[in-house]
Amino acid sequence: MDIRTDHPTPPGTLVAAFFGYLVSTISALVGAGLLLGYRDELAQALRTASAGASSAHLTEDQIQRSATIGQAVGIGVLVVLAVLYLFLSFRLKAGRNWARIVLTIVTLLQVASLVATSGTAVNYVSTAVSVLALVLSYLPASNTYIARVKHGRAG
Image 1 (cartoon, rainbow, N blue to C red):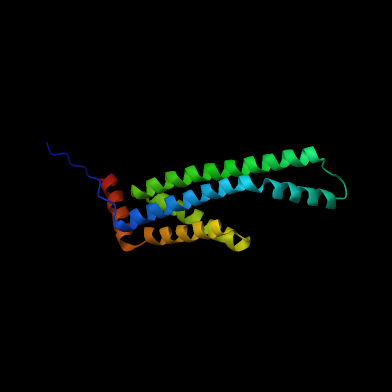
Image 2: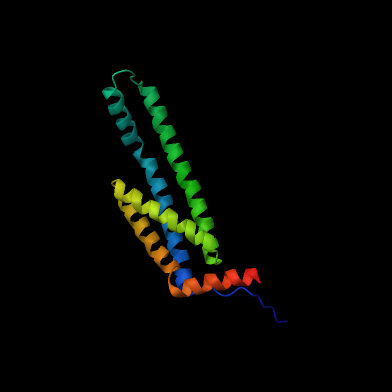
């Protein structure tokens, strides 16, 4: 029995881009894990801001709750973004140009964020891997594959 599919095999450049985005996603999740260790620093920053405020001063209980909420929101956002990144990575590997465009925008926002703020080593590694994956996703072999997939669906 001969089973054929009309789906072309992704080129090495696109497979490498896919794995690059996976590594970037994993490093973002590592960053979320590291955020758990920064609760005391977050609480101290809230204490400092509260002490400098002229109108409202936070109690220690409010500071602790705010630090917990800040961590939960930060980790929640990172997890949602990681799931989105994974979804886009799989769509890119399947030859979807719209996923490549969205990943381009996300990567450019990631670079802009890194330039505008002082990032951690994890941020720099994640961004560098994303930029490399982005470049790989636009190489000629990747472009040919995405065009072939697009024309295969249109026919």
